[in-house]
Length: 228
Length: 228
DNA sequence: GTCTATATGGGGATAGAC
DNA sequence: GTCTATCCCCATATAGAC
Image 1 (cartoon, chains in turn purple, orange, red, cyan):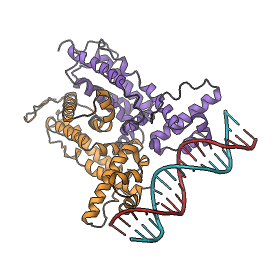
Image 2 (cartoon, helix red, strand yellow):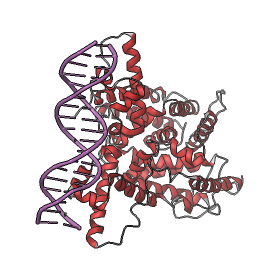
Image 3 (spheres, helix red, strand yellow):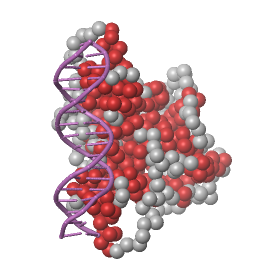
Image 4 (spheres, chains in turn red, green, purple, yellow):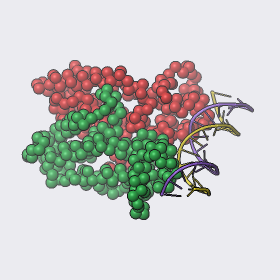
């Protein structure tokens, strides 16, 4: 069964009430899907969280799958384009820390989105077949190419670009996806801005140094490394 | 509702048939839970995969939750003890590569276990409240202490130990949990032993160098770093 | 111990009044 | 557009024959 990821687009333009209610439902659905997975979340619990009768959910989104598609679609829009900003012309000593910081902000600001996406992947991405196409493969290749050229130019050490990208993804998303374990390990109930800053700095230091990039001070623009 | 994680222990000693069937069911359940989550997996599909009638599952494991607890319990046993082998007396240049390699082997050999655990954490670990206790916190602190002392002795750079551990966890588990996305990105149907080796080497290089550890050649024992 | 048949509840979806 | 009442299916769990 194929999922229309863009199911929520193409809806007819709407009034204020509709827009408000749809947003209310989407937020509630995001919370429930993140907490219980697709099957585990119920239209009932979503309706309750949104403060609306169950039938209204079906009025705005025809089916549970449509609602899930809308949530997932919003997440993909959010995801797109962060890695796209990296270019071979950039100085990795400048843009890699920025990329790590951006991904960490995502983990802090949109943990639910990150978790829903993660659960979808963990389950084998049954609803993302049309997302993981040859286009995705081509896009990814264009991204690894940036790192490959950096290595070629001696701006970073010769590391496998694909695995470096996976490292960037995994290490940052971990703070959204495994927040519960992290809090348990640290014995905390919250993981605040200061914690996120420490995490960001630690990751940045290790990954940049691990790639042979001399770190520049924040705010300072300096060439990191000129020779191989 | 509290879950008895040790539900499968304390069962009466059993004959060959029971043991064989229980193992059959556990394997089938692991596959289904990993693929569809707790709620998404059905006793029917588990029974079918195990090649047994549904009622038999209930005969061996009273309820679906009991079955899930047994699966989860086996996973925790598997997880325990890998990080325990690290000691402050060790040379991180030797034992960190070994730890990374072990975790990567886990991702390769037990991807289902990794995914079930990940889904449980993603969902807020509702069934692991009795696992993430103060004991867990104390255990984690004892592990960070190892890295802290390494830094104190100048064996590694001064990095936040907790976040270093999270990095080790996230980067290695990623290859089990996000296998589906990785294959899509690489345009492959399989991620073979050679791929795992490349991934392991890349991670090892970046993380060790990122911590200021000079990597020793495989099989060679050499002091990595003597001074601060 | 094994398995068929069934009870029971819950969840997605809809009809139709307002 | 909104919401109550209801339908129908499916999943867990069990009863009880073998």
